[in-house]
Length: 475
Image (tube, rainbow, N blue to C red; front, side):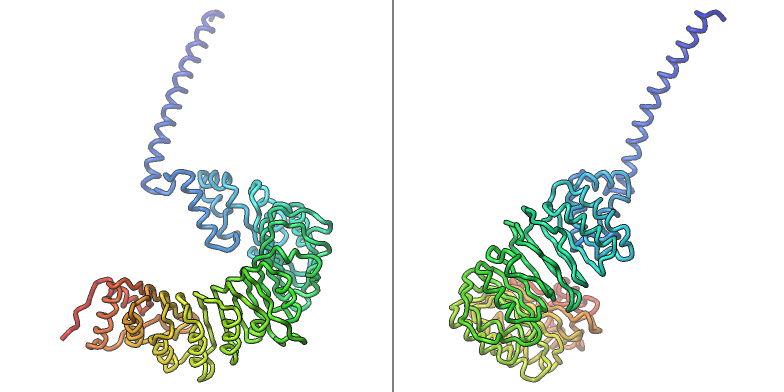
C-alpha cells in the first residue's frame, strides 16, 4: 500500500475511535444516571445534599463527648467515596480528639492527633489528653499539643504522675475558653510555670490535682465557671473561690475536713447564679458565701444540718432559687424529713428534680405524699430519678392529681426515671380492677388538661394504653 492509502486508513481508524469514544462517554453518563436512580432506591441517604449529610455527620459525632476511632469521622470517611469527600471537606468533624478513647494504640495516637488537627483547618480545637507514665508516645502527643496550643479552644489534661504543661515558655492562648486538670490519684500534678495568657478563658476545672500554684498561674479574676472536685484542702478551695469574684457557676465536691481553720466573713459573689454541691463535707462552704443572684441549686448527699445552713444562706442572700436538684441516699428514716425541711425553705422553686436512690417502698410513698402537698407552690416541672425499679401506678396518680388540684394548678411536666442499676422496668401493672382503670382514666384526663407525662412501665403498657385513649372504667 502506498503512503497516501495508509494515511487514509489511519484517518478512518481515528474517526472510528473518536466515534466510539463519544459513544462510550454517553454510555458512561447513562450508566451513572441509572446507578444514581438505583442508589436512590437502595441507599436513599446518598441522594441527600452534601450540606445535609455534613450536618447529620456532625450530630452523629456530637452524640459522643469526644471522637472515638470506632464511632468518629474516620468511620464515616471509610464508608464510601461520597461520604469520604463530605467528611474530609468538613473541618468541624475533626476539631475534637480524645486520646483516652483510643485504647491500645498509643503508638498511633501522635499520628492520629496530627491528622485530626491538620483536617480541622483553623477551627478551635477541643482536646482531651490522658497521660500515664509519660512514655515517648505520650511526650510526643504533648509536643504536638504545644505546637498547636494557640488553636486550642478547650483543653482537658488527665495525668497519673507529675506531668508538664504542653508548653514550657509563655505563649498566647487567644482561643482558650475552657481548661480542665484531672488527676487519677493523689500524687498527680501538672507543672504550670507561668501565668497563662488566655484572655477568653472562662472555665477551670480541677479534679484531684496537687502542687498546682493556682495563685500565680491562673487568671482567676476573669473566670465565670469554677469546678473543684476531690481537692484535698478545703481552705485552698475556699481561697480559690474568693479569687474569682465574677463567678456565675460553682461546682464543689470535697471529702475530708470541711471547715477552714479560721472562719471568715461571708464573701459576696454577686453574679453567681448556679451552685452545685455534692458530698456531705462540701456543704461547709455555704456559710462562707452570700449569693444574691442564686437561681439554680444542686444538692447531692446533703448533710444533717443542711437545712439550717441553707436557711441562713437564704436570709443573708435574699435570693429566690427557681431550680433545685436534690438527691439524698435515703439511708435513714430522717431523709424524707430532711427533704421536707429543704423544700419548705425554697417556695420559689418551679423546676424540681429529686433523686430517690436507695428509697424503699414505704419511704417512696411518704415522699409522694409530701410532693402532693402545697409545699412547692410554684412548681411547674417535677422529675423523679433513680426511683425504685418496681412501682405501683395509683400512688403516683394520686400525687399528680393533688398537684393539679391546687388553685391555680401550675404543674406542666412530670417525668419519672428508673434506677438502671436495679432489675425492673418501671410501673407495674396492677390487677385489672376498677382502681387501676380509675388511675389510667385520671392520667389521661391530666394529659388532656395539658400535663406532659413521662412514666416508664413494663413493656410500655402504660404508654400504649394512654395512647389508645382507654378512659372508660369497666363496670
